Amino acid sequence: MKGRIFRIQRFSIHDGYGIRTTVFLKGCPLHCVWCHNPESQSFEPEVGYKAEKCLSCYKCAEVCDKGAIVAAEKGIEINREMCDRCGKCVEVCSGRALEIFGKDVSVEEVIAIVEKDRVFYENSGGGVTFSGGEPYFQPEFLLALLRACKSRRINTAVDTSGYARWEVIERTLPFVDFFLYDLKDYRDDRHRRTCGAGNETILLNLRKLVDSGAEVIVRIPVIPGYNFEHEDFEGYLGVLESVGVERVDVLPYHSLARDKYRLLGREYILETTEMVENARKIATEFAAFLEKSGMKVSVGGYF
Image (tube, rainbow, N blue to C red; front, side):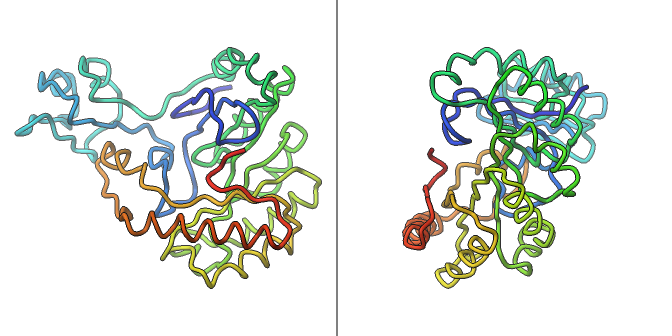
């Protein structure tokens, strides 16, 4: 059993209880305009380029069979339509200006890395979180990883948008200790506009997960002007109360993904200092509003 990942992050404290290892699976059916992991969206491998590290040796251009890399006034330019993502350029890049996002790995390879930090899981109440992208985009690989972890008595979490068939999610229930469930917008019209699909399946699966008895921590990103304004407080609360959610993580917008878009040759359209400051303010007020309603709330993904 093999699957495709783009990163494994050790010693994470924002993706569930305790110290965790977060395994990021590649591929996602949604395309949120504020996505902070743009390298996760496509299932295909992608080449990233850091111009500031380029030594202008042009070895990458020499090995590119497709002619997708050419010398520029400073560094190189990549024609991403011509690039076949073979990774040869990355292998010869002595300045480490090039990297490839997307690697095929076996279950055993992932578990070998996860096992290295078992002592930290045991001492902190941590474990492994499978994120993405959307981990259910690779359902068989995810299921195999979860089974392998549970057979080793390692705590597991799945960070999901919920945009998947319920039957796929249901199969994993015996092997997941808790879910981090991203509620990107309670309004279907905005969800379609900013995420590329409606939220009917997401809300239905959220209700089914809670009804199943699973521990579900809902995560709500605060992106002013896109999915959140002050007048939306009641709307989000109504959805949370209707399904019986008890814990919420409020995640204010940040611009830390800016460099990732640049790496991939994409335009980053959301960055404004005003938006970041406004998001923090609204997130703090929303968290206080939810707490008054009796919910357990954190801001920023801290556990």
